[in-house]
Image 1 (cartoon, rainbow, N blue to C red):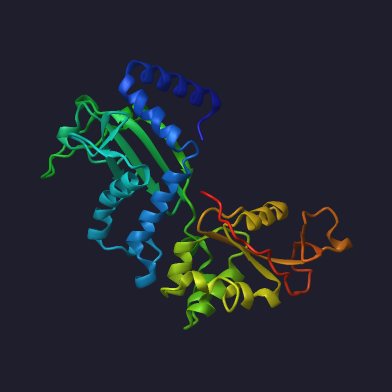
Image 2: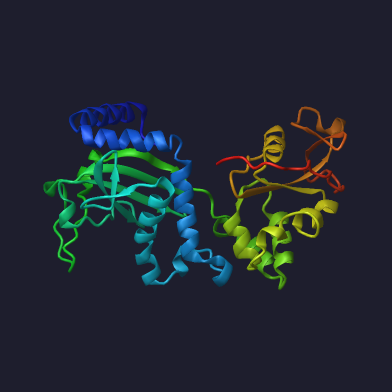
Length: 324
């Protein structure tokens, strides 16, 4: 994070530059209006990385295991998936038309590595970067000027932005949170324990045992289960939710009632397509001061090592999912 005085000066400079370029300001304001908190954008990036990993078929969860050709294809997929999500029109000369302005989309796996083609000079570029290892991403806008670019000698004549001119990027979101790739970031011993099972259902059960109080996305579930009906393997009636109930573990999904339970217990609130598991125990005098929730006629709290396992309560019936 930048010191407050530097951050304030940077913001003042950015606002002044936006006033000097009405087209860039229009694109900036529309994108912020379409996605004020960056959730839609971050979801596209998470889903694109997972699309490349294709965990359901390959079992992969680590960007380093992708082939070079797959990594090269990432920029095209980001461009396509952003257009699908936000329904941008095709540009006349660039990738998109946003706020009636041509905008080119450039994605880089390394911060600052955006490859700018000669035809983009004078146009606005949407510069996107994501790092699965740091769980963060950035996106900003820049009107490309030739003097801001390094020389290039690759066969496509593409150029990179000089480091000293990255200050001219108008950041829509800077170092924002990328939904976590849980399999990548969990302890190696826990990951090995999950994949030690032959059965997809057993692997999922072990995942929810070992990764508690953290959001687990549907693509993680898909990679662990490696089955077409992977979501069914989480639910009750034979899925992880019922298999782990006797161990005191609840699995909350993206339903309004489940999100409310997560909030009351102080757990991360599941977003669309996410799950959060936690062991719970009945509230006793040992738990005074802890956050608790009423379920099945009793009060429950998050269990700790001092609490012996007890069967978890049934979760309320859910009928409606929340919008992301």
